Image (cartoon, rainbow, N blue to C red; front, top):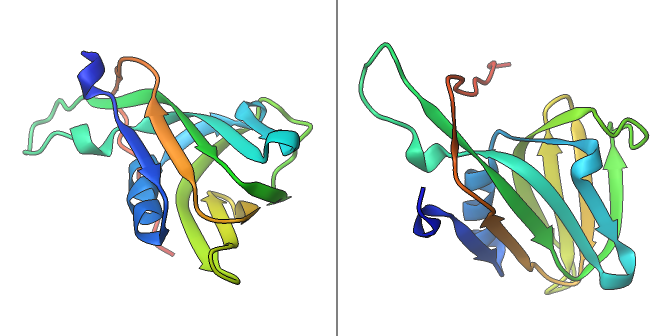
Length: 150
């Protein structure tokens, strides 16, 4: 695919973050693809993003979906806490479900990355500042992510 098909988003407020969250829903990554750089106040994740915007419509029996290698990073991160993630198992696969924000003393707050299996990353941030960039062409997958209703 052409480079102009690659998604590039920036989130500077809660509304932007909701849009970014929708684009990374069902992204998968390995624990080893999460990099916390405390001296730079940056958290970087390398994801295999499900390209929801490229999902075909219609009722064909043979559907092809897309994933893209994507970088997601958060700036101005003061602290990162994890729950339900074994940091020693670098090959463990996480499925990202959503990203949310809880405001603190403006403009600070807490960004939460919610993964399947009740795992979370909580980022104490000075303010919302995140970027998402597709790194290369899409590849086909026959699998459409499914969510089990609780």
